[in-house]
Amino acid sequence: MKEFVISEVKAETAVLVGLITQEQNEAKTKEYLDELEFLADTAGAVTVKRFTQRVGGPNMTTYVGKGKLEEIKEFVKEMEDNEEPIGMVIFDDELSAKQLRNIEDELGVKILDRTSLILDIFAMRAQTANAKTQVELAQYRYMLPRLQRLWTHLERQGGGSGSGGGKGSVGLRGPGETQLEMDRRIILQRMTLLKQRLLEIDKQKVTQRKNRGRLIRVALVGYTNVGKSTIMNLLAKSEVFAENKLFATLDTTVRKVVLENLPFLLADTVGFIRKLPTDLVDSFKSTLDEVREADLLLHVVDISHPDFEEQIQVVNETLKDLECSDKPMMIIFNKIDNYTWEEKEEDDLTPLTKENISLEELKRTWMAKLNDDCLFISAREKENVDEFRDVLYKKVRELHVQKYPYNDFLYNVDIDEGMA
Ligand SMILES: Nc1nc2c(ncn2[C@@H]2O[C@H](COP(=O)(O)OP(=O)(O)OP(=O)(O)O)[C@@H](O)[C@H]2O)c(=O)[nH]1
Ligand SMILES: [Mg+2]
Image 1 (cartoon, rainbow, N blue to C red):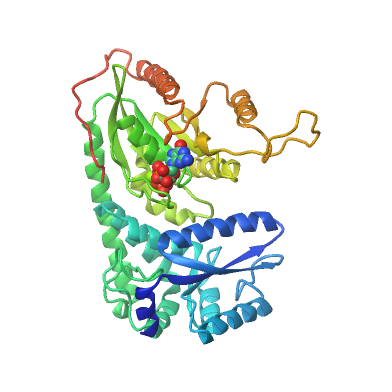
Image 2: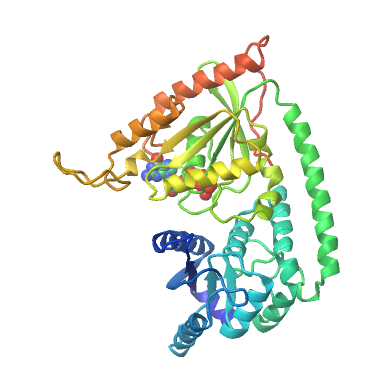
């Protein structure tokens, strides 16, 4: 119980653990851990230390090697002796039930992995019945093979966090209920129920979508925190929630936008992230239907992020999983106001790298690669927004004429849903 009291008075502290392997060099691991730290921060935990280990691959029983685990254990103990106990240790990859149990036995603190941390944030963010149902299902999917470990874990903690949602400490915003009594059978029953509920919601949404008239559907997609909701607010004059945290958006919102005389529908969707298990993507199927059914994708990229190129790849791969990769797409490079580079002297012969390429050069490179299908804007500072509206108008118009050749634009369809 003691740990509970502490976590209520001050933010929980976290230790991060990642591996350096052949596929993931030191710089990459640092980037991953930076992102993991941002995720922890979003969930309300303060990172106090990182551990990395250079290995061939994860250890099957303890993820890191014995020596490293011992080192982490000593640190945890030391902090406890200093009366600054560690709230949780977070691993950058998904842990198996066996790894989780062994690590927890050894360290004696709460253990999370990237997946359970993301699920925790999702639980905190879920607003609508649809999102809540999807998150709960995903949480059970994660828990089911790890039940044994969760039981002992919860007994040690002195109970769960109560009925799920925003409160509770990081990693324990479980699906709620009386977790200790839950057994496999009950969970499976509950999962069946949740799946049925999602099917019903899906049916309602299909009906809703049928009533939308003949309008072109555009979906904002992209990595998390790149500015999708900010762009939505800009174009639709809506007030969708946007903030500098990961996964600020969980629910899809659809708004009608009119550019010049042309109405179309614009959807804001959940962001993507690296190492997101396909299971989790599956759970968000109905949220992602907007993407699947879109006529045009606006792939938003945060050009000021050091890893923006990898983020583009992650998004493209996720779109491929969703079977959406052959849809018409425009790439919107956002946050140009925040882009920095090391300026080179005229006669400097250092080769061009990510760090010293100017925005103008970067624009030229990408425009050569993507023809007209990319734009550079700042949604927040409203830079180049007129051109963006112009290009978008032309593109949507073209798609509209192709898709509904005998129909004039419809003005009387009144759609402004906070889609569930
Ligand atoms: N500097 C700068 N910041 C921006 C710009 N556009 C958005 N932001 C900021 O970036 C952060 C994330 O913006 P959101 O619109 O919430 O991003 P999102 O892609 O919807 O993020 P998720 O819903 O969390 O996936 C916020 O703090 C925005 O104010 C921009 O053009 N320049
Ligand atoms: Mg958003």
